[in-house]
Amino acid sequence: MEALAVRLSGLDPHVEGALRIVAFYDTLMRRRVDLPALARASAGLAECVTGVGLHGTGRTIRVAPDGREAAGPAGPASGTAPVVLDEEEIGRVWLERSGPAGPLDDVLLDRLALAVAGAVERYGPARTTMADPALVELVISAETDEAARARALRLLGFAAGPPVRVAAVRSPRLPLDQVSGVVCPGRPVKAARIGRVGVILASAVDRTLFPTGVRAGIGAADKPDLAWREARTALRLTTAREPVLDHADLGALALLAEVPREVLRDNPDVAALIRVAGDPGHPEKETQEALESRETLDTLEAYCAAGSLRRAADALHLHHSSVARRIGLIGRALSVDLTTPTGLTRARVALTAWRLLDD
Image (cartoon, rainbow, N blue to C red; front, top):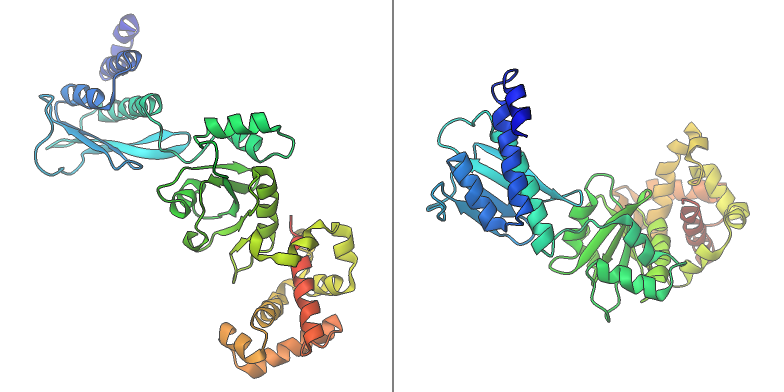
């Protein structure tokens, strides 16, 4: 390292200093120092107040260059860096210089952040929610034997005994770790993305806390593999009006998930909906006319949920005559009188089957 620093220093006056910083933190990490020691060493090296903060625990350490706890409120940070563990930001480190940032502050902060992540992982437990997808798959797979499943749960931090709740999540905007932290505050929770769907494992899940824009299905079974199957079914049945569904609330409608897709698609009522709104299992085949008919389908969903034209009109913020006209149009397309109890039941079942065609 010293020889490399001497050779490179002739090319860039800051290279030698950067390499010395790297070597400094490599030594600290080999010695397995804890967070206070890291903060003290960094403050002495930077010759300014240095801070370490962890999101999950709320712990904050601020140390002055003399190694003592920094007095007074925190000043403005002259430089910051995120502390990342398991692809999740678990905290931040910063420097509080009275003047401008130093030329090597970025290097120092990057190495300090790496050292803090290592210390948290070593002396933890790490307060992260993102987990190894392979471990999560062991928990939710139907092919995993119970001994391997129990071991995977232990490695993920779940105690033996209480059942683990499982949720299937689609979150196009918010990162999965943020969603997990919100719906399972203060409780053990782990998450991973399996393909296009996020998996949340938790000791408890509060369905009322899912953020806007997130869709989720929650399994009801005590066995994680069965709960995962239920959660995926519930997720497939979510709508804009019901973005979060508990499998336990589906009742007999969940039986439709056991019907082969080909049978669902060939049913006359479902086939009529596909002609109106397109095939959710093959969105690339949708015609422009089908896309324009989604407004009519939204009206049908509101009508089925409300059970009457006036309540549907209130939900859609439309005049009831407009809703009546749309319901008449879609009733003729389905060859069903939607104003009768039988017709309304057929429409509800067809809508459920139509949603299940989306994988």
